[in-house]
Amino acid sequence: MKKIFLALFACILMTGCGGDNQIVTQEPITDLYDAAYDQFERKNYDNAAEKFRTVETQYPASEWAADALVMAAYSQYLDDDFAGSISTVDRFMRFHPGHSDVPYMMYLRGMCHYRLVSDVRREPGESVYALQQFQQLVNRFPNSPYAKNVKNKINILKNYIAGKIMYSARVDMRKENWASAITKLQSIITDAPETVMPAEAMFRLTEAYTAIGLTDQAEGYAEMLKLNFPDSEWAKKLKK
Image (tube, rainbow, N blue to C red; front, side, top):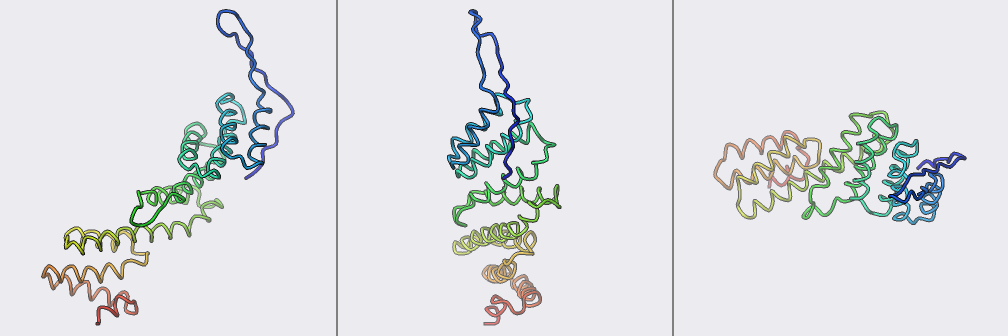
């Protein structure tokens, strides 16, 4: 994360307060930023994020505002406050859509969702959000270093999501909920052909159609499996 060098000046905002015309002084932006960065350097990320957000809210029109949001979001990410980091990224995107750090912030938002991905049996949809964000990053900024970084994560997420669907289809098959299982297995073949799941999906479809007495469909998927994945474990199980 780049360190932003502070300019050698201070701004003091003075406004009238109430009817007694008291003078209210606002802390100079350089002092605020210095304090925030000091907390960041000390790895007090929660305090750092709060102070960086204060810089942005008190000086929203300054040249420091966008950078303060970047640092706030990054601090929250390092503090494992992924929901807070996503919220800060959203604010950055709303007010600074043309900033040079947009690719990084898209990457950071995707990483927040990526870190929230849990066990395949309990996954609440974060994998889909992470995949969408990473794919948008690659589409919008294909030459950025962040786009190159997420390509492997995209493959991991696609396999993860396909695995989640496969797990659900297996559960349906154990419950003999054949229609639901068949729909899910077919979606793997159609929507996730580049993952490791299509071979098993074809094998399971053979089982499912056999179970409901549709032998022609079962034989069709069996042939598809032998043709496309002749050396897979699932093709070998089919022979048995």
